[in-house]
Length: 336
Image 1 (cartoon, rainbow, N blue to C red):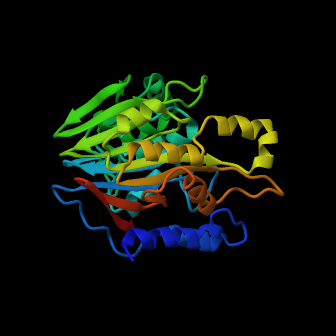
Image 2: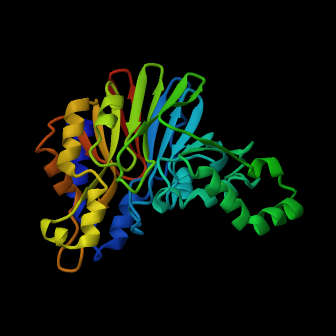
């Protein structure tokens, strides 16, 4: 049995823990990393780690959206949801090692962790130590976001400069607002922003493709079924895609119906995977909604629904799951 098969079986066997309120301690234990520190990234390695695979729900097993990409000596973070700083430490990184943050869109669950990464990463403690300004790439509105945070945390910033002699330049946010296209190209690492469809009133929204040395990962961000994403993702080894699902009876609820309409359903994601044909497709940012008397869809059901339209290699992502992207293949490294 391959490691990928073992991961799939593990995910299916543990699926009941995802939405269970009866066994929260067991669900949390599954998300905890191993005792060993992850091995450092080799100079020629392209590693992707899921830091957070959840949604706005405060789930101890699935923290807010965040994907770490390490390639070509660069450490890039896609989105910064709730708990990303904790997951970075669990993955063996200092907060200051993040070279740049890329924001898919400005929904709160994708950015609520920014103040922690920005402010805590400024500190001179061993777990922080950012060497320079906080570098952010985001859609229109990102500069206003960081200006507002600077004002909101003005007392803290001034106090730490005066009391701890922290460097003002390191707390400065260096913001680049972008449109579709190549937005970052340094050291052989290229990031392309991909316009996606999160709904008519939720623009702009983007996915990202990161290429380095003939290898790539594509991350969907929040989107409905997107032809543009399919086009840009062609030839990618690893495709990380969000998913949303509810039981049919809940579609009578107008709030849930609206939320589902802004996301990709499992069978629709299967069509995306079939047309892109990645070496590995991975679900993240699970939006699995339920109500009293109608429990949420679980990951086993998500995978089963996706199998209606896709028969290739596929996993339900977990927080701290890592992958090494190689030319023509993806090697799962396990849960950190």
